[in-house]
Length: 329
Image (cartoon, rainbow, N blue to C red; front, side, top):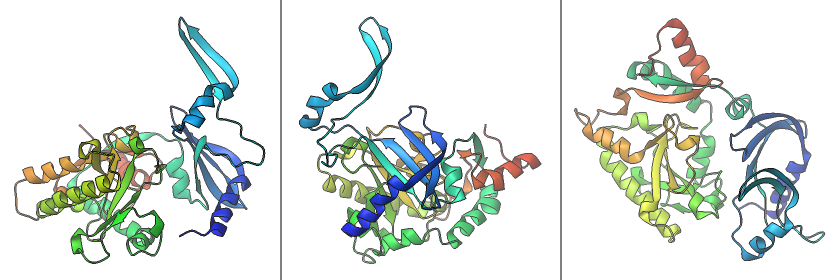
């Protein structure tokens, strides 16, 4: 577990951030990504509005403690304002209620900057041929560059042990071994914003493209285990309040399943062209003709890509320019 000293060192990084430019801000204005430096190293600072605390001691004084109130407009009984909120606590008292959720990436890489920068998007179709000849080698290269070391460290219990909320004993369950931990964007308190990751131990499945008809029983069993683990860990949640899906393309090429509360706001990570429901994947496989080796690598998949992503610049943009890309219908 993190020591108090390591926590203090990490917390000391935030005030040292030297702002240089804004990379992105979402349409609702609730999240902003800044680029700058921390101790002469490139860094990303990501501010996100935290959920409102539901504590009576906070809510009972919230309205009275609003500051810098600016009226934006009025319409009959309706008015709009901007304001700074939250109680002002006594001097030298630690702030009990956070107004922001903050992520720090330091040192950040060019890939981080590209991912978090505002950019145009394209909707592409990845045919079985494009997957086999272009995308699969790209995945292989990404795996060989050591980008999965952090995942393997979690699976093998060397890192983030304190963050794992459920796991089967390492190695005991073979292909059915898995662990669950919170997605980094979840505050770990707001149940209706619950977002967990189910990471499997097996390493032969990189993405949903590796799933075949022979994996249907495994997928159904994994779904049941993930749901069961979630409701046992959070008994205030019912099984029909959970959604399970996979990303394509995922952030990293080791198979994992997202488990979210149905009330979680459907941001771009749950949109068409990014998220594919686990039940839909199982149904797709079940409806395919062929033997157990028939799978998701035999169909075309359409999804969105950022214009700054390597998949676009290295694969789909050259294919488009050469006339070899399959256009979405």
